[in-house]
Length: 159
Image (cartoon, rainbow, N blue to C red; front, top):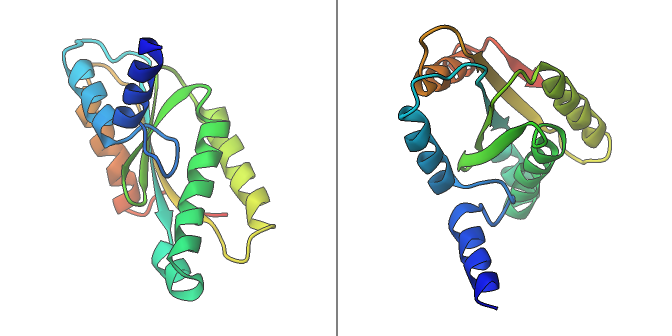
């Protein structure tokens, strides 16, 4: 019985209750552990920003905007979650961190979003940034590069 309580506490501490992804606390603790590791070999970081939530909120209400964020999270977990940890780090931003290459999984994510759009009254759209390990790069450098791809609009994906 005591273990169930500990499991529930862990779940509440490290899970974003709206989306089921890991939360910002879990993300920061993960980064703290990774910063102590000298070798990031094989690491891949993907940043995913949900586009158009404000417009969805304005047109359909906040509940529907929340549903759009949940749809993105669900799709990330179903398509990339097998290979990567999925973190919701802000209202409309997720970070996926994998210990290996996940290029094929990204394609599956894009396809799944396109399929979901066919059944929704609004369009799900995301911007993606991706960075893979190269010699000597830290986890922080991978995150910065992944973010920079989005900021520079090099990988805006409208499904």
